[in-house]
Length: 569
Image (cartoon, rainbow, N blue to C red; front, side):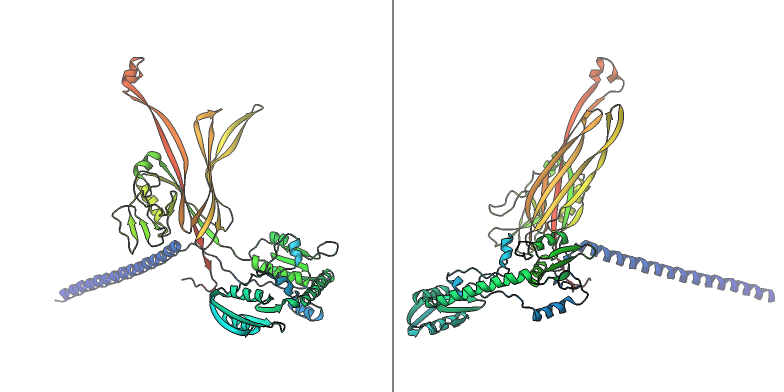
């Protein structure tokens, strides 16, 4: 009995060991599998998030910020002091008389449409630059009706000004009575008629209209002479005014070009020489301006206007190669949204008649039989131009269509480059190779390399938020081995250059860069085709010509400003 109990104990011990080992292995496998799934899921989440960001992100243009020129120092003559230039300028304004723009005399405002007051001094026009001017403030044109008898002219003018919300000052010499009966006449015509009828004229200073009698013209002419003397004194003062120095950091503009423009606004002395200087500090991209206070104020205003960020343009290109026969047989059909010329409805051009269009848009089925197959059933005036593909709806529509055709063997996508450039800046895309050529000169053999490339040069110009003009130049080199020169192939060059106006996201197509290849072949019965004379009965010769068409699809995207308060999701 004792022996049996020991064997049972041993057997139970082994069973327990196996059980615990099984439980341990099961828990370990479960734990490892759970970690692996969690890690794989986490990687998928990160990858999907990255992929989504990559597909949605196209980049941005810099946001417009208020230009805040940095003061680094100023002083008389050419000394650069470390004290605050702003405080120095404020102190100078109280110590030295600051030249002010003379008031406009009323004698210059006798004409109904007056010359607007100039903001920049006359020297700017003398230098060949157009002076900045305030826009002419036109009188209201809404129609009014009035009926009054034996009313003072001054009261009539004040009533007229109150109707249109105009500020008015009337001279004490404006007298007389008026009878008026006006029905549905423009305000400005009524105002001019009253002035002519009662021998009056006006002068406009800012938002105030001054009404004077013609007999006051002598007084106004005297004021004009005084104003001229003030202006002459102002120019004389500018010729001896102390020079101040200011440093302004340039953010976006070309500092060298900006320097050349600003130099034209420096005041000249009595000998015609410029007073002051403008220099560029390359290390900090700053302008060092030494000039009179009035010149510095003028240049600061110009820099505020000129040193601004410009938009960027993302240019996407697809360079496709296909046979002309395949293109004519298959056609390349894209869908797009087009606006009818009457503005009442949209037309969605579908790749096939079975595709449904959502919303209130009208679907149109395309025809067939051309390289870029646009529908031939559109009415006159729809505004569809051959050579354009509207891709605003669905950015990846064109890429998907081309990829599908490539999988079918209908075409070959040579490359799909994209590049971002600034507005009015040239962007170049080039693909090709260097071809070795053997040359012999004075008995010496030399190897030179020449480029055989397909290049694309695009210069975009943003017209407004939705439209841009593009200057496009394409260049294609191809090697022709059928006409070698000293064993070297010839290079055939083809160019295309054009200027087009596109909407943001619209695609233009450049074609005509075709390539013709020819090949000769011979087939026949082995051995028998090599028998002299009789061999011709057992073999045949053939030739084949292929025409390959290169199409370039160019799609520009205007990159919007990304404001500083924008949060990245």
